[in-house]
Length: 139
Image 1 (spheres, rainbow, N blue to C red):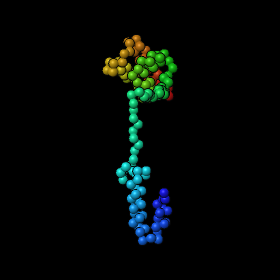
Image 2: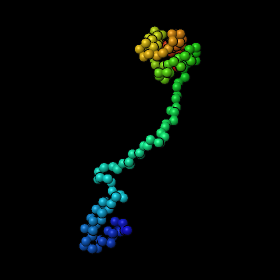
Image 3: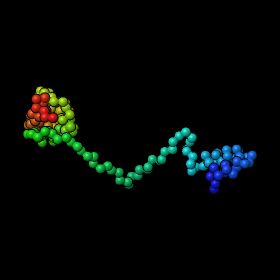
């Protein structure tokens, strides 16, 4: 099968060249091999079909928890606080006054329902007040 350009070259001398070129263009545009589904639209691949017997999974996303400052209460703070949110929330806070940390720990327990025992809450509060206030924060 000849290409459009070779047909055009053969037909240039004849009086039917224009009508034949137009017919070839329509024929090629109408073929399913290279014509879009509808002119002016982009063809998209069919969505993959999902089956019930297939296995779909995503591996674990990497966790890049920032390191909390060393000190007594670090383990309790990391374990209890990370049950609801990343420890990044502690580190990205501006240095808060000691009274504000007390309000925050109380809010987490009373308002948001964090199940932190009283003894652990006291250790966490002391840790936050020791390491993350304007006077004690180490950058």
